[in-house]
Image 1 (cartoon, rainbow, N blue to C red):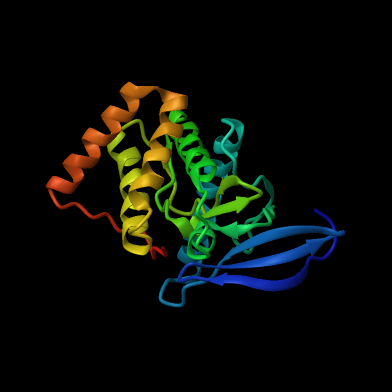
Image 2: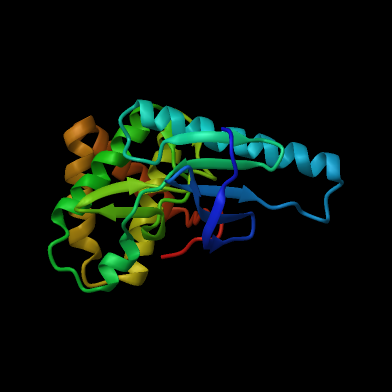
Length: 220
């Protein structure tokens, strides 16, 4: 990509990356910049950040090809460990639910569908919480694939479900059960009832052994 990027505002500052809204030739994009870590040797730090940037971009590209609603990757700049991606304008699911929205069936169903499409490709999100879901005119988009990976093990897919359910229960206890019911309907519409049953069995196993996987800094 040729030409300068104009920084419009900072969207989020995390432990690993800074996410900014930028403009390039009149087009709004999101730039996710992995920040250097002073405790690592410079050459090691560069390698780690580059590898994580490539891995995240690949996950997003594979998800997009599978029909998962998520930002399109526009450009990679490995010298700065930056992903430039489509800007999906909307509100986070967390903000939508916090506003007291009562009709969330379409949103929840769409989220279940998106999760199923992701899992059907052997991908898992790794940090599927309401802060990482954007709602745009009733459509749900998955964002922040920094902890995403590939696995055919239903365990990883069940962890996605478990993280979403746990974060909803903690933040929105009055609607969590009904919301997850609609998520399951959406999931089953893609992968079938047998896949839903298998997923829920593994979720119960995770709960029974007390496994609470922390993949990153989760936000409800």
